[in-house]
Length: 178
Image (cartoon, rainbow, N blue to C red; front, side):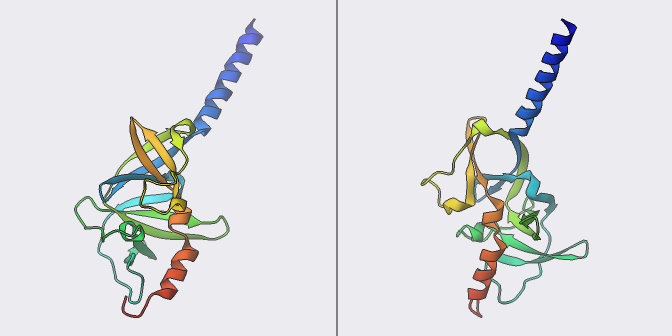
């Protein structure tokens, strides 16, 4: 009987581990009145908005660069990247520092957001596939839609939204006057 109880306890621990692996953690933030989230594994840190150094001849979505402990980090206005207006800087504006790219080649960059609200635990069952319509974002930018406390959160695919290759091609196409 003791052997059977131990086995069941081990099975329960294994099931708990599997359930934990099926839940993902997402950093939730606001942008233009909408709530978005991204996989926390891409996030290095969140910092308070600081003055940016503008770089000439860059696309409008690249607002500038910051010095982050000696490293030059480009900062992207996510609102402009989504085809919207400039993010208005307020006391709650943040820069989310991310690591994007493949395992062989990663790039550190920042994104401007209106504010960061929380870290969400969202289970696989609470994530629906990206909708074919109903969002003004390109569908490949959306990893899915999470249901949290009866509300929907758009889950972004960071590596697609911030594709270094795509942004480089947009930078090459930018005319001299922005």
